Length: 546
Image (cartoon, rainbow, N blue to C red; front, top):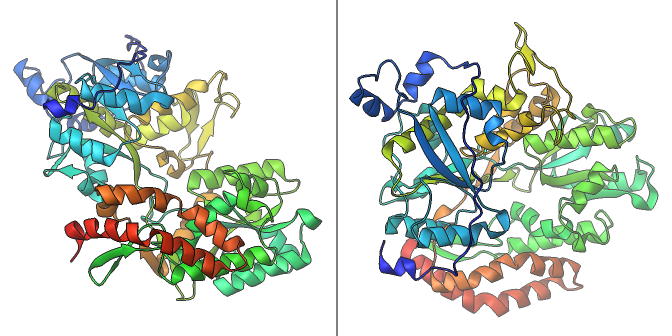
């Protein structure tokens, strides 16, 4: 470790550690011999030294520790964890840290060279990651990942892996979000009440296409006809987080409103672009004409979602990835009398250029990594387990539980569960079915189980007729804004100082919408911050300008 790394040492902290080990309990292994061969990696060399490589690439028993916020005292009793420990001949303990002091503990361990061998990382800070990789805190992952084909496939599909290279090596494996297998579009979508559209005489499709002007006309029709007979409780259009969502929605006009935009080979502050005022004026029109909830500019997070779930809103805009979309349909069926799943629909809305304004989804959150002193065989074993968990067979296990006991599948691929949702919830007799997903989250985030064929927890209507169809429509004519990881991950004094202004753009946007003179209000915001923006852009352009 270089000396300046230790200068970052925080006050000494106590790190809570929860120790638990895999027992010797057996469980039926459903994995094929070919799967074991694919995931063997460098463990083959260790086994070869003992003359047992071909018979069992995992002949050497390994024990190690994992640093994480995910874990519990009974984790080692989860069937999927027990099977993994038996199949790959290892056991592990958990160094458990609470979420509220995760960052401080992580920085302390990095500064004191105290990480355990395996790190299941959350809240990865890019600049810290690069510094720690260069300082030798982490061990580089193999440059050739072909021994772990399922993990390798992720590195080839998602752009984030290239962005996390440090000196052409990967020091942390991002935990990919698998909530959209069809493309890289984010899942902020328009949900609408099909039953209310039908009550107004409109025969709309599950995914109904329209222009922005047609969309506004629909909202006005809802307000005038009140198909739900709610009176002054009716909200034609709701945003997920009320006014806090307005600026995010404004990216349909200006994708760079709270960031930087390339103009003639140079990066400039995005907010001054005239399209920002286009967005302000459009949302102000919605607000002033009573199409938005009157007090929604002070909404708490998820207030708009809660109103939609309660049956007060005709159209809702928010994050509707497949799991959330499925939960939305389920909640509305349970909360609203007479509501059926097919009463939920989606709007695909073309903007003035005739295209669908879409942005790149957040590909990942968190990562797993290895301490610089991690043994080669431990790294190989952990990667092999992660590769195994991405196989369809293991996805079914963490989705449904133990095959034959918790669920069965018929010859047509239809899955039957032998338990209720209450059984699998906290405190239920089958709670491990939900809890064991924590083990999967060491390697990858949720989402894969929703796309299993025959999954009784996922509706064909919701997943295919709504979510998949929406993505197909967008793909037909997108105005696509990819993530700019270069700028997001670039750190410099003036750019870092300007970050608070960018983060506060939403508040200024709300003020402009509510103002009697939105242009003057927005211009004042630009005027007060342009000088600092120019300094930030100068640093950015020194590195990335053309």
